[in-house]
Length: 283
Image 1 (cartoon, rainbow, N blue to C red):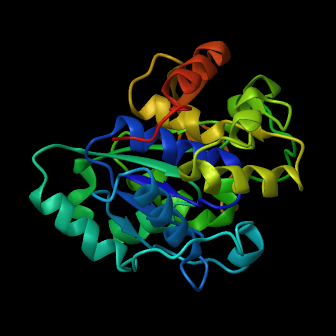
Image 2: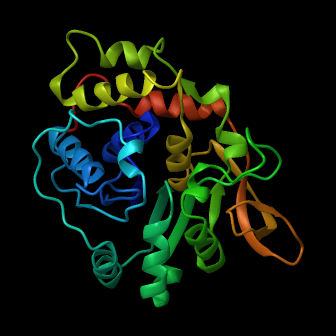
């Protein structure tokens, strides 16, 4: 279950691409959704282009200002309609699934919080890994990292309610070692004259992102790797207090969660490069 704010930072597009290559039983839901469901339309169009028409895409929660955090306006192809109603859809998935659901949170966790409020009896079915949070350092210690602060109430609820929640901390993902920029081999391939049409959406996303930022940290691919058991992210147990603004701090009277303690950056990037299909789309 990939819960993504696709259409802003490039790392979400690459995470979707990798998930589509590796995960047979993939479901995509969107968060920080625009009023026109642009993120879900992007996901639907991309998945159809690479031959994964079987993957359900559901438009999820909206937050104020989402359109300003979407860089793909004018690039979206015509795509099949996307449904809404994440909670009803996921309840049906949990009802019929014979295994636990691996939920990969790449964005604010509004969808997850709403699902837990509606279906608390499903909590033990969900293996929850998300990107976000910091303990020892962050580029701006006066606030929570991006994903928690987008919907801090949802973040606090999910960390308290989820069964053994895991956070891949921004302490470790906001690192130059995980940066991909316009000088990368990936971007050169995406923008080459002979790049196949199915990669055009990711190329446009990369170009729009690099027009605003010098690079993209591979936060979300690292989180997907952790959720899939790739040996690139190490975890440890911490007991934390969750503040109203989404910041977490160590507190022996707090909530026990799993947090990343280290990322093997070369291993993470090598895994990403090995998985990305830079020659032909999924059959």
